[in-house]
Amino acid sequence: MRLHYHPLSSYSRKAAIGIALREDPVDLVILNALAGDLKSPAFLALNPFGKMPVLETDTGPVYESTSILEYLEELGPRRLIPVGHERRARHFDRLGDLYLLNPLGKFFWDKSDEVREAAVTTSGRAWAVWELALADGGDFLCGAEITLPDLGAAIAADIAVSEGLTLPDPIRRYHERLLAHPVLAASAVAAVPFVEMTKPRRVKA
Image 1 (cartoon, rainbow, N blue to C red):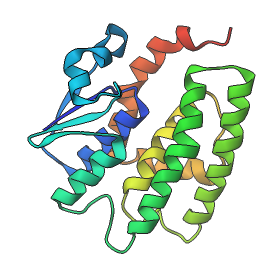
Image 2: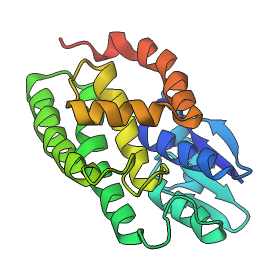
Image 3: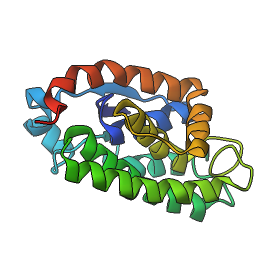
């Protein structure tokens, strides 16, 4: 299997982190969106929507990060959606996509006051939900191990820190625990050169 992705893309990172945590034998293929890779006939044959990530399998392509990880979980073993925590894992994964990755991802590229305010307000509400969920004493959302709902939150926290937004103290500590894992630490480090490279394009006019 091959994952077509980019280290800067939030949803690509989410899929790649999940694959690494699962230790699946998947080759990583870096796409160059600026060079038009997402619009190439070969890529559009994999995903007609022209978005990454895409998992290329013997039975056909799978796209959308959560769908990719769900597909791998079905192949086994279960690692990211633990038995007994399925609803919680999927619920917080969805919340992370909608209310953390989406608004913070927009702010990453658009530094207008309006987008910043929306990112701060929406992510602030989401972090408050995360704080309540973590208040039962678990290191992560489904217990002692990093699972599906922690992935988007980890990337969102990375974006917030890189773009100068302050994390609430409980979320800052949660982020530190996430980055203590070598897989998540490696993903954050791999994104840094691209974060720096794109800064001139992301400065507020």
